[in-house]
Image (cartoon, rainbow, N blue to C red):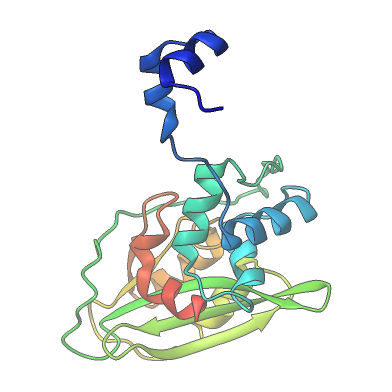
Length: 214
């Protein structure tokens, strides 16, 4: 027996307008990518941020780091670990304006450099790759791998570059590695102009983020 819309709405005690409003409402389902991200996030007890999750998933699924960050943010799957805030005696944290402002075009080599540290899953542990890219030709001009993503790793990478043209710009995110006193001093000694992404905006450092996503 078939029922009319009027009979159905009366039977369930709802209005016709409510029925039509919800009849074609999209059912919120998770895509295969989202399901895999959810699995990794829950498996690691919400202790991993989007960078680590991307490092784990990119071997299985071709997906950019910005997409992973967006999915985790929209789904409320961001890292829930409370980071301990501490400063070593004498430590100076310094940030810089976004001088690059997504203008990566360079007229000559080593005029505009970008740097970042990414995760490298290694068995049950993590290694960390620090890289510096020349945006003139997307060449990796320095890199170093370590088991600690600290300021020393970034400093050692930067020290691989011996000569730079006057007015060379180095862009990075605002992580503690790049706002540390150690990194600040080395960059200053090399007369480097510093530039930093806005907080929580990996797209501001797109060239190196894209390289680390590949």
